[in-house]
Length: 564
Image (cartoon, rainbow, N blue to C red; front, side):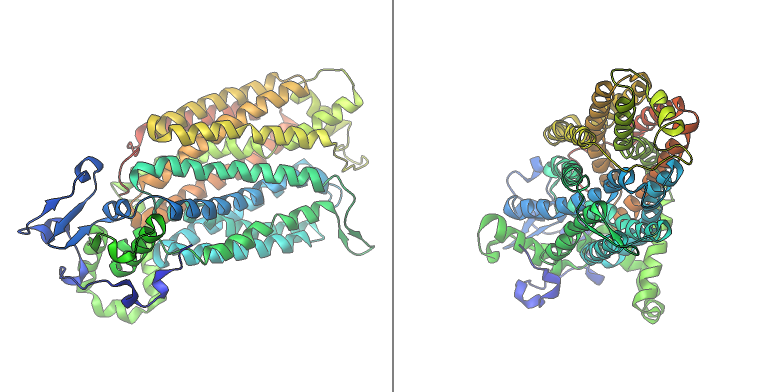
């Protein structure tokens, strides 16, 4: 794996100091004017910005990453970044398996369960913007390491919490860490990908979310139904707490693995740090091809135009900027990035991205996190009414008014193995759709998958109202899980690609804030309406999914296009 070249001496990289414009800007037009250039064979077809001047070849990001080849490094990167996504999804979805088990320990009713599902999203809203903005100012790698350690420690602390209030507090902090993980890891991973591979590889990384779901469902099935743990009059550490503790292990592991990865070269170029970026490209070339770094054909990098413009503007105010200090400068960058997202021409992308993420995640988390609870309710109903059919609303009415969740009733945290089996089948159904997304994302495009997914999942949400037994419930849930996972991959690709590099982590973070708000509203609204007015949640989710998905048609086509 590659160590971070930014921490090495720059002389090790064998970078020559070629003449560039003042402030280090390598504008293509100005630098190449009057210079005899020879276009490399195949570069026009690939759209790679590479030129040769004598023995030295210049390239922008797309040209440099193409020349580095595609191979072992990118697959190692996929494994580590995918594991980050796996750990994130495990932490979010784990609560849906804990709720039926913890309802007696923490005295939970349906509304309290809704808030427990939602508190992690409230934390994610608070953390997403902060971490995303810091990542656009200080870099992706450091932020990801800090997030992973914080996330793991908060999960461990929550597993030891003995009261509902303390458990909520640590889940909030857990969410604040997770809030930065999504936008930063997607930006980081995308910024190592050539345009010809980006869609399929982002879809591949999205498949790790499904892997996280499978891990959680399998662990829950193995651990939660058992009687393992420790019990005393003052302290309880039972099976669901042990399950939560084990869910923290991936976060500790990825924090260590990230230490061996480099900073994003695209980010470094956007900050004008060309020598550090060139070191990273050389290391990628060495790992992918097995050749010596001296054979890497690119000798000089063309700096991002954004850096040139901002650097020229900073010359006017050079002394005040120095006086501010490092952290004041960082805060200025954060505020400037935020303003740019809400100014033309980026404003349209921001508003559409926020709206799509909000509506999509009301459906995604609003239903996905309630499936284990619904399976448990169906199981309870059929234990008491064997052979009798009933709709979701009738089952819910029985459980709330006559079953284990009735007021002043006897609390039971017993969960049958069938509930975990049904949950495992539901999340496993996303595997085929993720494979289709990986194979077809760069052929059929992001918009095709997103519209198809939101429309089909909207139909599935409506069909929940017509479910009358456990088998129907399982089929509809499995289809919903499969198609919405496919749409999630397309949405992640699209939102990551529409924002320019200097605003990417912040733009994705703001979109994620909207997504988490959708998760909060989805959980609270479904928790409330499921008991008070059962038909409403399914049709509300259906309308929002279909309507939000169609909005992507107003975004630009990013399939096989260079990152801006």
